[in-house]
Length: 456
Image (cartoon, rainbow, N blue to C red; front, side, top):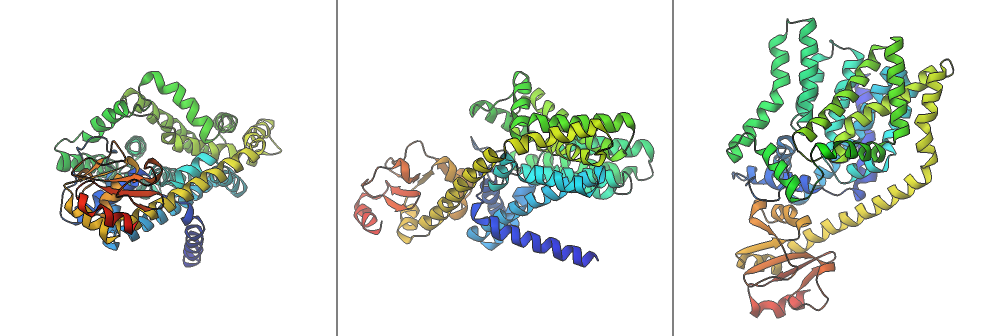
């Protein structure tokens, strides 16, 4: 029976990757993780103190290190495939949580609510680590909802993995471990070790590679200011409003809150309490980011939004017996049905842009594979790239990301080689070597520019 389930899951995963792959591109975080992982496998230490780089996340960097054995091209493809599988896992995790609260039909509805939201599809198509993070946390919550203590070890292991993606998982693990220890202290040492594993590994990672165990905290805080990201307590409520509205919609979220309140007051199911706790802790974690003056991106609300989607879908379990749950179901379905046409167009447009970005990534790889370009880069002391291509260029050139500078101009100064988006380089620019969306220009060897023009 288990073999049949695994086979079906594998078949679904392979089909999902095959269908979605042309529409998946790698986010800057993913590109940097691949570049840093490759640097580790070459025996080097990535420079994580360079300015304007994303926060390093230990688990994606570890995955990038392993994938680098395949080579830069295959590693990027494998990372994209993992992004698709992570989204499938998130949909399954929400299904499983909602099924535990309100039955199989509720699980199916929750899966549809999550899978069809344009903003969540965007995060998946751009390989944001928030998708696998949310998948691991929600799946852990589903395990706890099914067997609050019986699945403790598996849930804590999932939260430990999630804690190497984003630190908010530390709060979930700490609260769950405290709840376990209040009821039974026989496995206290193992429980504490699993709950503390992720923060300890992250602090040690930062200490080893930057000399500062709090580098991720301070670096992220500085980036929030330098890159003008919304942050701070004054932005907390506005960003919470934007996040819930864009990810799920306030009516559906309100339906989830209504179902949670009804279940808790009626003492109908402990599983609803777990889902409600997931929402409450997710919002609290978002609030902690505001207190710590860290960025307040809407994708950091994925976990509570998924919990609300599961609860909203669970209203199906009370139809037609409970007027409260009937009202909740109407609220849950109002936004998805009313906005169906708009959501379909938005998703279609987003996937088209993702497909174009996927092609652009291929163009960059094609450009950097050309011998004249490689030879010109070898003669240049400085290589620069447009911000979106910095980490990818580093991985393809087998360099640390900090060695590739962020270009301030599409045209090079003397002694520089620049990789720019083709749209920023005027046609007919001397020495420009074009490959679709990307253009290479060298300012290191004026005598060879004519050859470069011919090769373009």
